[in-house]
Length: 395
Ligand code: GDP
Figure 1 (cartoon, rainbow, N blue to C red):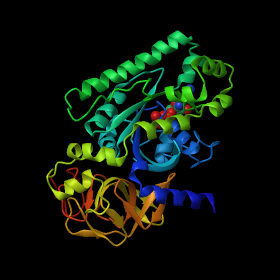
Figure 2: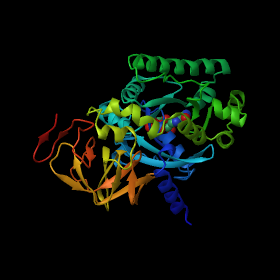
Figure 3: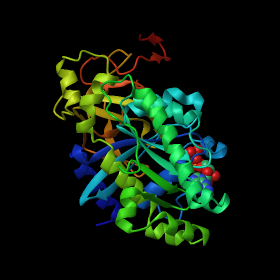
Figure 4: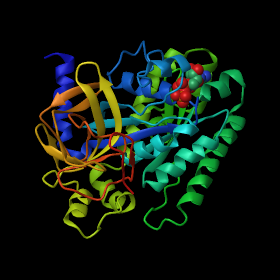
């Protein structure tokens, strides 16, 4: 069987297994390394070649993004990762890294249950770090931390072990102070501060593809002294082979981010303003694949062959071709032409996409980013203004 076919089959099996799904975002201040890290994860999961990771910039799909070297549009990629003997489906939604597109960040956060916050070790927490954290926490999205560009502390700034440790602990303290301040008043959120001991903090270099966490150091026997030695000796390939960044980060994702079944009961009351006692609220909380279909659209992409693709999180029910679905803020229904999931950065058509997954749908001609698409008329997740003919304004 071809490799691609095998991955498709793996994804299709995992789709029906919400315990093994993680819907996540990587969020960061611009230039802290989100794109480089994402490519590492895709390469580590076998979705793009290891050699091109870092150059390929898989998430930067728009031409002008590549020209400007920044990520604008929310895009979706998926990968599989084996953790503790079980395969997992990890759906990654890209969040734009800069201030002007704050609306997009919030929307992407709504579709995920975990946010890996990337912070540059040299710059530390920056204003956009605070913004993305606030957006994540407001949406009930659990954070973990990856401190990137640690290679620079060692090779460029020539820091010694104590100095480096102090700097890294400062970054963690700053991030935790932000998290504490933001969650103080939220009684549905437990302690979501991050900690090295618990394994919710990773360190490393997305550029040189190595990473560590407390659990990974225990597993590989690597310690900071050895890392510093290899990094200084320019033995980065060896460092990558001994402690690959993608394994460390993807293990952290599987271990510390909630699956949809654990996340939705807490998140639905937080992100959906409809009747909490309704059957629909129940099916969404329970990730019921037999319930009414509810899809929250995070992004509209264009496929040269298939036309407009609406991508988003299925909170309830099962999406299938031929369904007639309501689109919030518009009159009438749209018929689903095809449903798919993401594999790497590519869309793969499948027969059905059950609750808990990120789906790619064609045929939803009235949907825009932010639309709620459903098999019954319902309170939408987001009030949005439709700027089309005729102009319909929803409040
Ligand atoms: P984004 O804006 O957060 O997506 O950041 P990018 O992934 O595009 O990275 C911004 C710049 O930092 C690029 O020039 C990367 O090559 C560089 N970079 C990313 N990760 C690292 C790292 O771990 N170490 C070093 N030294 N540079 C890095």
